[in-house]
Image 1 (cartoon, rainbow, N blue to C red):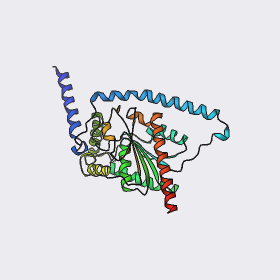
Image 2: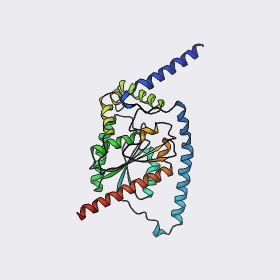
Image 3: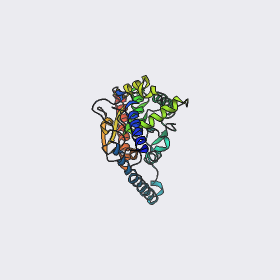
Image 4: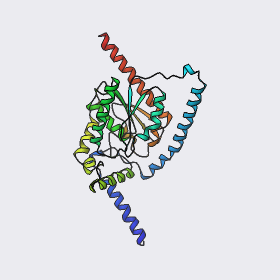
Length: 295
């Protein structure tokens, strides 16, 4: 085999060992599976999705320019919207989503997460404080749009603080099996754990993926959603990063799209579904208020 071949085999065994031992077993329940190694190739459609967004943006600009000046004003939607990025991503990953929602009249807010690589419980506490400040400022509950891990964080917060959250929309968030993700992500988690062991603060530790922290986060994401908090889960069977079956909450309004995992954050077809979900939640909230006033 030769020295180089032997080293490659050893490296492959190490990667497999990392992929199967880093995460707690309860994060990958029976019935779910990691995407095949080659599944990540489906993420190549991100190029087409980015192009689709660019064409859509150009079309919108032309439409606005051709409209009379008095008709260019966008009706402001009442509900503020907090955008939460996925694993190893930051607020900038949802820039296109934010622009599109603002064009539809929504006030969007950043999560203040520069890179979603820290303890999930700490991230949830940070988001809760952010929600409180937005709710106080706007005098209303907030809708949350979360991509991947961001959606799982949104799910847990909605259960704990329904007084702050009117609805959530998750994009490719494997809530039912957080461990049902591509081995490349597990390798990334392992790197964070090694850096945490080395003393670098603010990163995921073993407790976050295999200890009490991981279990608490997972159990919170399985609790029933409050009856007055809407829940939409958007998933894609073309997802090359997570098992799409883990993204479909049993009580959620599930919407299937044709997009890559990363591309969900910018594909205009997906964003249209997000807008529709936000509007349905806002309309439901108005009806509930009207019924309360009538009573």
